Length: 315
Ligand code: ATP
Image (cartoon, rainbow, N blue to C red):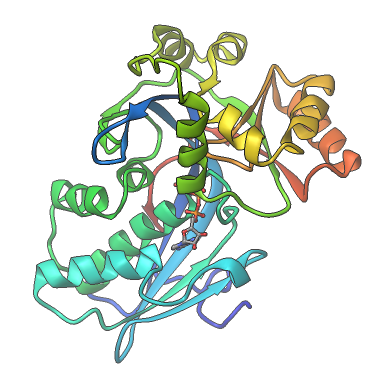
């Protein structure tokens, strides 16, 4: 569905207290995802290096009688439109803090794969939070918005700030990182999704009987980001969830191999998958990888983009 709220050029200019606010918010790839053993509370400690990439959802907030959600885009049918939607939860959380009703229509124009390991739901939560803050003029400070984000989910604070950042704890404590150049990426959408909790359960199952090392940030990843050197970053990329994602979705191996054969410097599962990510030396190499992936039939679509991308931005 594409409705009247989401057409290009119809987004209202940003500002407070107006009648429509559109926020653009990026997807992420984890250039390092080191996962520790399951803690007593079931969560895992992480050393998580996030990089925001140029695939975006747009969240438009307009005044309404009560909270209402609509969604457009290729995966719109898979997005829940009830109170479980992270964008709805974000609007409700902000309204509660401000002591007002969440009387808003949120329209999500979705380009980020759903259940794809690219934090699409988290992006929508951050987008909705910023859009509602601007629409309602609550005066919430950036630190307060980040606090609400952390309550909503461990990837949500990063969706708000974008760029590159180190996430510790469950991923929600962020330290911004410098990036010294533009990286060229290709993302291949898989047929179907993977549930993040299911991938962590598989990680725990595969970890049975062995000692899981403490997750530590890789200095190689940090150096490669700061110098902007794609070869160095390709050599340093790691994702501890990849074996679990491949175990649940073995066909991803063919997709990874196709991208590698087509010249990608590195191929990996994005976060909990099943989107796969390919780092290329430059833009033309990225297009060659995308063409090979598309021709292979191993994925639903392959998209070329760059990183780092800015965080949630009022259009
Ligand atoms: P992550 O990378 O943060 O683990 P993901 O990218 O794999 O997440 P999402 O697209 O965020 O996955 O969706 C995970 C599940 O969350 C979906 O299957 C859906 O049921 C639910 N969900 C809630 N809100 C949203 C939303 N706004 N967009 C997409 N999915 C949502």
